[in-house]
Length: 89
Ligand SMILES: [Zn+2]
Image 1 (cartoon, rainbow, N blue to C red):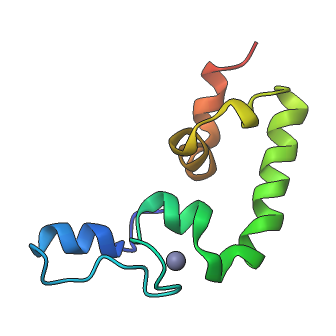
Image 2 (image 1 turned 60 degrees about the horizontal axis):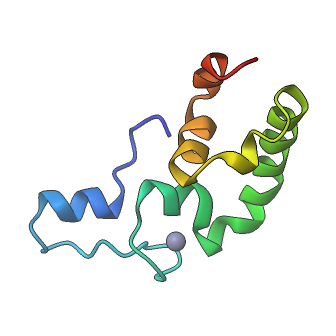
């Protein structure tokens, strides 16, 4: 999330197919930012309570917001929630 880890999908795009973009943790999908933050099955047990806490706090402050987010909005809110200030009522 700090940008110091290079996702396999980014590494592959810079190396013109000589690098496999598949997630090295689960081997189930390309390791994109959304996969890494929201969907990787290998980290799901660690991620679920953290995402639940984030969702709870957002819904407490701004009801019905989290469920209205698309995948990118969820990823970017998890990475940097300062964007929520502009959505406040
Ligand atoms: Zn994965």
